[in-house]
Amino acid sequence: MDLKRVSRRVVALSVAFTAALVVVAAPASAADDRVVTVVSEADRAAALAHWTPERMRQWVGEEWLPPAEKIGRVWEGPVPPGVGRLFFTAEPGVDGSCTATVVPGSSKDVAFTAGHCVNGGLDRYDNPIKIVNVVFVPGYDRGAAPHGVFAARAFAWSGTYPGPMSGTDDDAVIALDPVDGHHVADVAGTQDISFEELPSTVDTTMLGYPVSQAAAGEALFSCVRPAERKVNSVNTTWNTDCDLAGGSSGGPWLRNFDPATGKGTLFSVTSRGTMTEDGTTTDLSGAAFTEPVRNLYERAGEL
View 1 (spheres, one colour):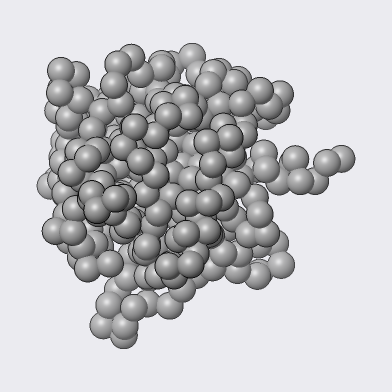
View 2: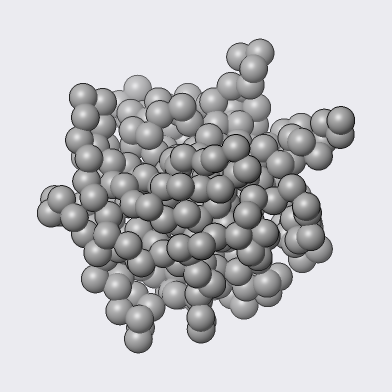
């Protein structure tokens, strides 16, 4: 058995539902309920060098990818403002991808994604595994990077996020370096974000880059489905029967979406899903935003 091939499969496909692995950093300060990872300048340069166009397309043609989506459809037309593909490497060298969205922020450098895309907890031996080579490509489409490739200079999640085995507060913010002096929000646009209480059912446009046989993560896919709010003793989640495969993790759940402008309001992101034995996704859920996540977002411009 090719263990490297199998491990690549696990990261590429399960990133939407169980995540890659990452070192868990300490809170920024005793009074700061965030867990912040700062990326050195040298590591940012290494990330940009790592993610060549060829490496971004490495999953194309792989036979082990899960079946093509039946509900999710390829997005027709330009990628909506702020939406893009997030790439990373889980040491010791396993590449993976998620989805992220640029949101308004004082720095104009902030992307929003799932917590488990940058925090995966521990390996089977309880050792932390670090996430490196984190870059974001807004507007990604079949290898094209129309707005540039943005290296992450820092990322953070709320101290209330327990890690990838939990769907509670599975959210993260990423601070991106400008490219040629241009901030990501200025060149790629943003999606609005809201933390207000919503009705129990919301008409939702979900976007993501699933690494499935349909396009191997190379094209944006969408589901337009009603999202239902479910409350239990542990957390509150939004749930749909959308079938986007792994790689769609962190993708935006947008309400009041206008197809003419490609703009909506983000109220959750893809967090977890259920898969059959052949890798087919049967449903997806996203964590309902909480006050700690609101605080995380409101301070993202400081990163």
